[in-house]
Image (tube, rainbow, N blue to C red; front, side, top):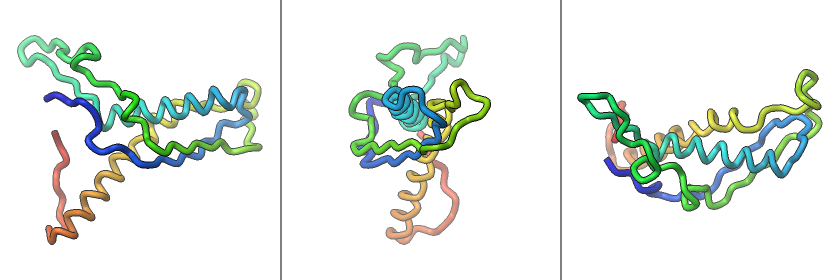
Length: 134
């Protein structure tokens, strides 16, 4: 299976991140955007293939393992950080900014499922479970 890029561009993403007392807001915003985009790649683009006989990873370089590219970044990407939410046990009262967003990118799977459900309803399809797969 060859995956080149997202089929439909993501129009808009809004993120509100609790970064505690950010040490560098510009760097944190870059980390937030990068982590979320990395998560989008995980859910929408990346595909691991293994040799069925040897178990060797076949998609082991960017030529055949497609990480997100510039055109996979949401078109309207809005990021804000909360204010006055210090972390009393963190380094200079800061909080992590990238790992939580990789996890939060699962929202794209739910948005995709909701869009498919709506399209199926409009087409008169039954409201029953269906598998989303390759």
